Length: 173
Image 1 (cartoon, rainbow, N blue to C red):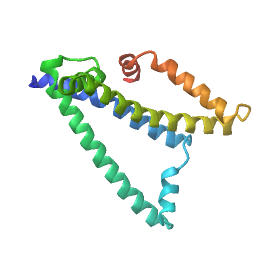
Image 2 (tube, rainbow, N blue to C red):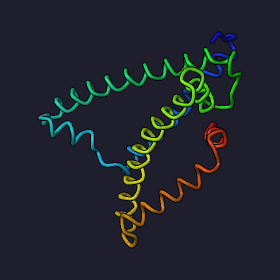
Image 3 (tube, one colour):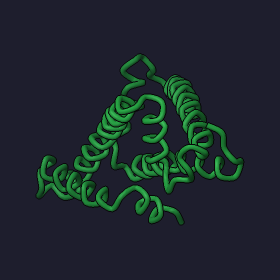
């Protein structure tokens, strides 16, 4: 894969856009109180009790997570940048990732990428749906937690039917 600098940069950045929106969403969810402070509970379960210990342990784990995510995004951006000559400029990162997987590994690469994306998205979706259902059940207890989870799963399905390109276009200010 070789690429022209302008097209390569645009393609690589398109791959990273989804991650930024995900981080903004998670930050918003935490700030509004939708999700319980599970990180603090987990740190306390491993022995940190005083506020300085909590801050230190949380900071260390956060730095490790940021470093790992940065490394992943650097490699994903590089994949996007190097794939422009073969795949052309794509509307978002999904066809770039699937094209690269297919290019290097054939049908098995597409299947592996599908499995990786399924597992990554499934765990995130389950967590977000469960957190939103718990919040709205506390706010409006007329519906059970399970019913709220069903409402959010159906809403998520409906939004997903619009497609990635439409969702990115709607999310960009």
